Amino acid sequence: MKTISRFRLVLLIIGGLPGILMVQTMVQTENTSFVKSQDLIFEFIKANKKIAKIIACENGSFAAELKRIK
Image 1 (cartoon, one colour):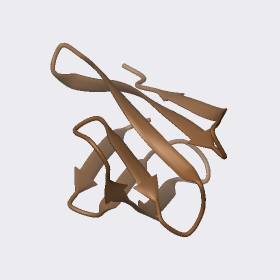
Image 2: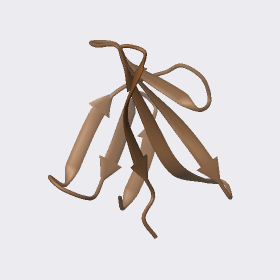
Image 3: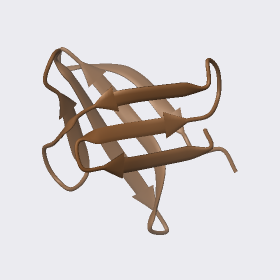
Image 4: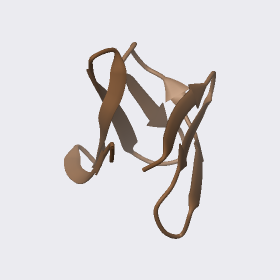
């Protein structure tokens, strides 16, 4: 994963295959965002003031974990 950025209502993850994933999200808390159109929540886990990984949960269950690659 090259870049993880959150700009207001858009979560942008760049890197890996297929390359670009862009999801419109709503900010829920400082560390979580959700997708209005489906039951999907992203939790941002920080380490040393940088996002170290994102945990995605769908329908209340773990769906995926995206880790920062150095």
